[in-house]
Image (cartoon, rainbow, N blue to C red; front, side, top):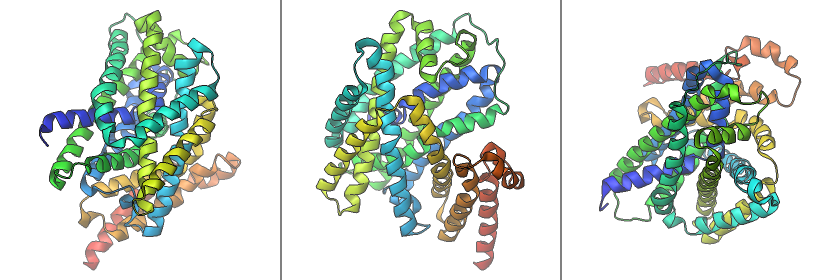
Length: 424
């Protein structure tokens, strides 16, 4: 690398931008509005699932320097194949179209009154152009788009912080910390980490002169930069949502809260700034998702460029179709999918960040299987009468908070580690 510091900064900005999409914009202010005086507990929970674990995912990629397939192959090749197919299917079917839906609702429809089909079609046509020129993605996003996103966001946050508003409403959450944890699922950032991290590794492989150690250092440091940026922005937006909570209608939607916040901090011109911000933030995330999915299927078919192109086109077409749903509908559809795949993704990230001797294939298998089994009640609650699950939830610690898999996974890791040491 000719200029390591510059490369780290540009890559860190690009990572931040690919993480920071639709959910990252609309969720924190709404969370802050509902959290009100408990905003700090909500922020801590949100930080764990929307910043800490995703950045660990990037650090795991720095260690592995492979594809998302490598995240699950210690469980078994078949498991890893199925896991990858599920994650990529969810990614192109939900968070990618959600970026188009948010862009339409907040940046296009209020000004032009056009149909969502037209917005989605133009939007994903541009996404396809970027995806097909993927070797330039990091530079274009990191050097030009991200700085503009950050400037607009920081303007909203700091003007809000130094306003005369004070938090005057109580929280509506029974357990603010847990509410923050679960809302962090909706950012898709843990899933984004295993998808986008692969994009980063493959994009860097275009430079044949960069060694494994140089790439590891670059990915690690750029990941930390992206994580710091996400933490500052999330905390700022949640706090602003809290201090302006009394000014929003009780049933205000996520997009209405974000729009109201920008108007109250930047005035009428704030809505224009917000429109630019929404379009940029959503677009960069969609590019990252479609690129990552196309990379995977390209590798699955012996590095076939045709497979890459076909996947990109199919992903963009699916984005146009699903982009016709409004933001709320996509969030509702996403919940059961997230409750199914997020716990497994989290444990895979945590296990892959550990040294080899602490995360053997046996430990991988045991922890992932137990996590899957104990997360089933969280998934089933969307399809059966919740009262029928009460008995099971009463037997599993934290299950009522939709975190029933956490303690069993930790215990399994501890017991399996001890048994492995005795066998050795």
